[in-house]
Image 1 (spheres, rainbow, N blue to C red):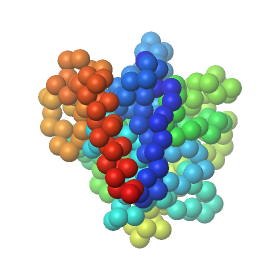
Image 2: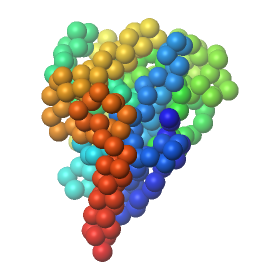
Image 3: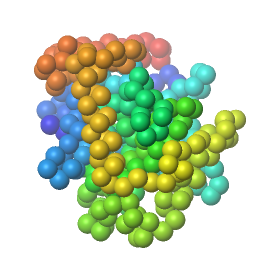
Image 4: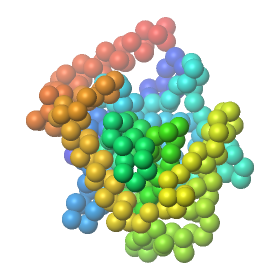
Length: 276
C-alpha cells in the first residue's frame, strides 16, 4: 500500500518532522516500505518528494532514525537551508528520492570512479505541479546526471510525474532538452554552485557534466535497488543506517505494526518533553 498522508510535528527547533502512514493507518518507513516500482513492466517508479520546487528547507529522509521520518537536515546545530544562487530561487524541481534504493558507500562505481553517498538515489521531478513534502508520486525516468559531491557519487535522476499533463511527450533526456530548453543547463548550474554560499568549492561531475540517457538511468536505479536488497537483508553492513521496516518479511530488521507504533509514540513523547 502507498502512503497517502502524513502526520506533522513542529517541535523544539521548529523543524518540520513527518511520520508516514500507509492507507491502512499503519506507520511505515518511506526508505524501506514504499515499493520501488509503481509499474515494473513499464519502468514506472515511486518517488518520495522531500523538497517541493521553489522552497529552500533541506528536507530529507532521515536514514539513521527509526522508520526514517522526513525531517529538516541540521548542520553544526543549525537548521539547513539551501541559499538562493542567482538566478535560481530555492530548488528548481520537486526534489526527492526513490524508495528501496541505496548508493552503497563501499561500492566504487566503475563509471564515476567514486563510491556511493550512503543515501537513497535522488530524483529531480521536472513536472509542472509543485508537490507537497512527503508526497509519493509515480515517475517516469528520463536520464541522469552524475554529481561528484565531496568525492562521492551522487546520482541525480531526472524524472517526470506520470500525472503531469505533458508526461506523454517526455520519454528520454533529449525530450527535456527540446521541450524545456535551458532546464538541463540550469540543473547543472544549480548543482555546481549551490554549496558555494556555504564556503565550499563548486561541485564536479562525471562525464564532463553530460546527462546520461533513460536506459542508463534505469540501469543505475535498478543497481541501487540491488544494493538496498543487500542492505535490508543484512548481507552488507548497515553502519549507522536504520533499516527498521514493516514490509520486508524476510529482513531481520522487519518489525510489527505494534512495534512501529511504539517507536513513534516514544519519539513524539521525547519531542513533547523537549518542547516543555
